[in-house]
Length: 301
Image 1 (tube, one colour):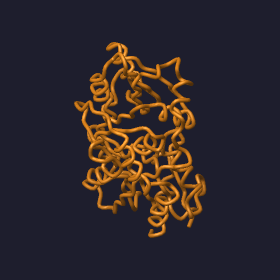
Image 2 (cartoon, rainbow, N blue to C red):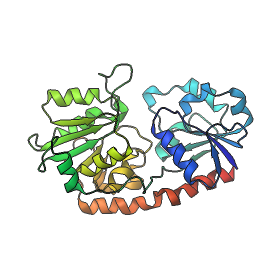
Image 3 (spheres, one colour):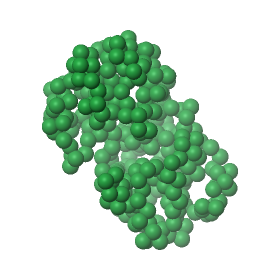
Image 4 (cartoon, rainbow, N blue to C red):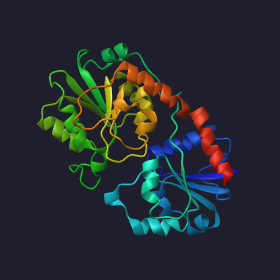
């Protein structure tokens, strides 16, 4: 079976998913073969740039990563829905939202993670490497997702919860906490950290290897989003040996033990025991095994 994967080609997570699917899938995967049997629309927001004849003459699977109710464009969804045969979503929360607007089948299959990419590194060596940014005694909390709107970077991207993240880290001792940021558009959070005199370090365009180091150097990774499909950090941080907490979004309950699902008013950090529990729950999402669920899904079509 031939599958045409259409991702955004914007350097977003869907591009990595497409590349990994091509590498590990049992199917023949292409990024430009219009003779494919199935079109996998991984980046649904680019659908209008695709020849309509291609979408209408092929079986189309559309992935909806997550939806923000306040930003949901119902008319655009319904227009695209005419070209879609099946939907794929990574979590039940997304399915519950979009099923109100379509009668097409919706398949829930969580994201995978690549255990060959994300791995624990020597924290002591990394602390020495990054000693110009923070001391060995600092409690380093990581956040590697963009948090500001593109049109005006001073405005928070509220679905990512940068305001909630700020509330959370504000509860820590400012003499020992250090915030480690990565990703694009961190303007909103940086402005608030500066104003509150909370120390931070920012690596804007960190590649995968660099991010692996940044995850590994953290004492804690905190997800404070309001809406998510995953997020990918649920896998990446624990795979790098870093405890993680998250609000009750996306796949959090599939990956994290109950004590790691929090809100911004909680100040407790997870334990090494909860990290081990998370790592055990993650095993079923390792790419070489979990991708079979995607292969079976496409075969069923």
